[in-house]
Length: 464
Image 1 (cartoon, rainbow, N blue to C red):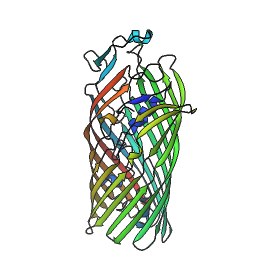
Image 2 (cartoon, helix red, strand yellow):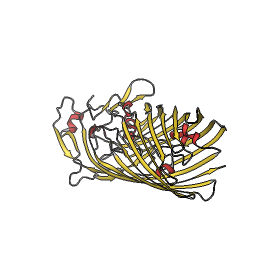
Image 3 (tube, helix red, strand yellow):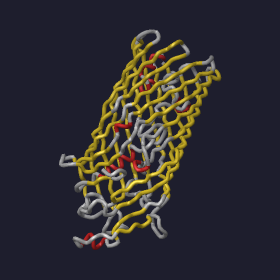
């Protein structure tokens, strides 16, 4: 398979889904995390850049980050919060061109005519293409947690979170419209778990997850018979997947502890349909499609130490198994063959977090943290404009206010700086629904990206 190219097979509308999902998998989850992950399951953690995971024991999110950490608390607790994510990712044309036969009409209507290829700039003077666009959007990530004692050595917890949640939107005539217009992924994860204290120092935890994913994607369709009149394609698909998570926590003393946690991969078989409209009559219509994808597993190590009654430090690192994602294939739902295959060639990624907490008095705690996240995308030829992923640095600030012994209110903020990145890929413009040979009309899409993000969260927790 040619690197950086999407390969089209028989008549299908499925190429839209693979381009969109692959693009969604080329993102930061619109926030702090590599690839498609979202780490924003805790506003308390947001303020310390998620350093230490749930090991600091400053909220109720342990069942998600490390279920063993539930043993650090006692009693019944509930928590609910929202993180508002505002991302700006500006995509600027860097010399995109379209290659097509100058004698296209004869090639399409007169068999045996040899093409005479020319390349034209997509952002040439007089072009109607929007050559600088911002695909970032604003989103909200909720979290809800519950924890309670079963007995002196065992606790139960439940988390309802959105581990993946991304969205992008570009103008209808932007230069990369044949790859992406509007894209959205929504998920919900239901995660019950238990924790057990094995010894005074060692605790273990286990949880299971039922995870729902819903994808909606669209792009423009190049019309070789009327290049100024694009068609429109939209794909939708959803599925439930299931997984588990494990954790272990070791307390060296009341002020020092470490934690190790693992969340399993989750397999999806997305089922839905792909609709083409406002296009060539023979290609318009709806097709049932399926796509298999595996959300990666990850392993995290966390450390926490209270230095004195006021100051505490924390750190963590996480490895994510993104090398599972080597290609994405869309098949016809009737099993008659593949629709689209796109090579991705992702690599595993790491994140590194450090943070501090300062207890000003029993009512107020202040936090700060830093995280560096690696991207799983190897190079520009595998980076898609749906949401381009890149390495990033993020800085968090936050505080907790305890108006009483039972209630805690948390506020957190994070600023993300994305490393400059680029796209350099070649795509076949006519969809495979048309009987046009691959390579006859191609776009060499070249984009430069720069981006930043602002995250703001508010959360409340209550101890009964």
